[in-house]
Amino acid sequence: MNFDAITIRDIARELHLSVSTVSKALRDSYEISEKTKKLVTEFAQKHNYRPNPMAQSLKKGHSKSIGIVVSSIDNQFFSQVINGMESEAYSQGYNVIITQSHESYELEVQNVGHLIHRAIDGLLISIATETADVEHLRRLQQQGLPIVFFDRVSNEIDTHKVIVDNLGGAYQATMHLLASGYKNIAHITSSVTSSVTNQRLAGYVDALVESGIEVNEQYIKYCLHGGLNLDELEQAIDELMQTEPRPDAILTASDRITTSTMTLLHKKNIRIPQDVALVGFSNTVLADVLNPSLTSVHQPAFEIGRKATEMLLSIINSKRPITEFENVVLPTELFIRSSSASKLK
View 1 (cartoon, rainbow, N blue to C red):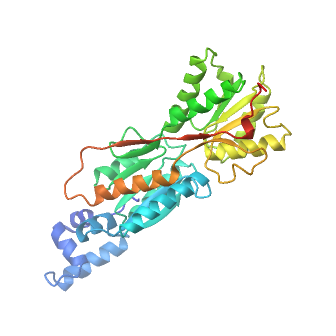
View 2: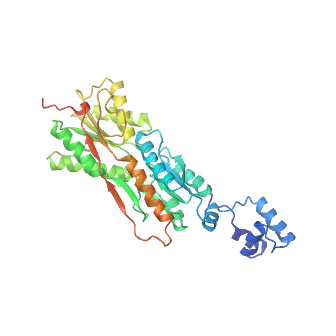
View 3: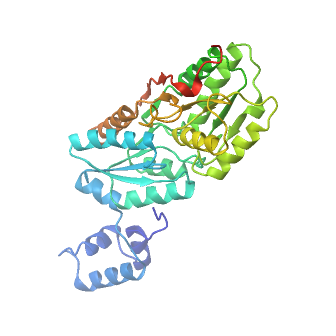
């Protein structure tokens, strides 16, 4: 959103008119003289005035559209989340407008601005891995835009949030690897500023500590772009493979990182699980048919999308201001397959 755009108040101040007069002139009201209308409209055109669509939609009622920001729609997890959002939105007579941040903070800000100018009634957003400053979202909420976070959330903004049990999912996956005989378990994750990163890292660490295994910081690799940058991920894998002792298993913390790690390990002729076992957070529908089949932590993506949309629409349709918000945590499920076959056989 171009927050520096000229406003009705700016026009009124420059032309020494009341805000009400400017507003009526721009609406071609019969109450305003033709001379004043001409003065106002010419000034507005010269200074690229655009009506505030959010303010207009608030005056007119609902636009019946909600905006969605995800990192990438070709990510299986997010495509399933969007399916849930569309299902709930359409059932309540709303349309959705979907944008992609590609894990870029700047693109996230740009996309949110674009959605605002489309006069959305509310925003569903999973924060980009690059995003550390959420002032662009805080400002919109203060202006009255309903916002609900899902997956990657911000604790700096008080609103509804829908996540999964990230800590529990990572803990269960790490304990499975330990029980299968793997002791040198590495962890490849996203940006250190991400809520998901911190929760899944905590689950990994808790499992190791509980099992009496010292946490090796060299085994923990952060990928700022969440697996979208293959060079970044490949460097992390190369560093792990050169670490002594070499990891015998890897826990990957996102759908993109998981599938891309499997691809890169194949490319490097590193056998799974003979050379290194692999368990990851992934909602890929191909997990069973991959070679080897992929042990994965599955997230209820459709339900995340459906629930987040339900909560957003409850804010939009409320006749009173919402002051109490809910943090919904949905369970994950570990599907054990060949990529983490036991070493104890």
